[in-house]
Length: 222
Image (cartoon, rainbow, N blue to C red; front, side, top):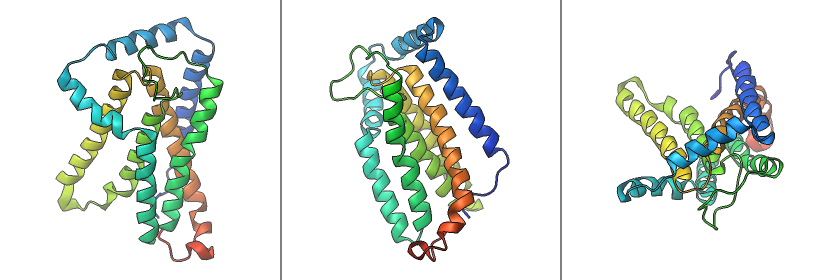
């Protein structure tokens, strides 16, 4: 099975969900200190930057747009389904695409002021939807792709992990630098993303075997 039993998973779900709820509660109550930190950190990271820095960050900002990521998700899920990974494909689709209604609901509940300089074409989301989707996508790459490297390909494996971390960092910096989201939007997305992914792993471990008995998924790798 792709996802093994992990006793630390459930405690980690509660820990990261609790941290996320603390941030949400502080923002909902308009805590002075949390707003001061968010404003200062966001202004510092979104101050005018050089052309070279703009060129470095722009690909991450563009490729992390929800529409682009959805196209990636659908293409990957289609490939997995065709490769007889039907149950993992369903898990992948449900975990990533349910981020949209979760993010939309939180955006309605937590009223965040619009950032100065935010492009009109970029909608206001809390937590940062580009960061949330990118994080979930990279987590799946880490679970599905990284274990496929054998011992002889250790360098390639390490480079892949390094690239994924670097890309996530670029996405986080880019959405702040281009005034899409604030620092707390990004931090909240990372906390929620990890809690949600761990929860989806736990669900997959518990119910993947049941799905394998259904006619549609019979013979699928789990």
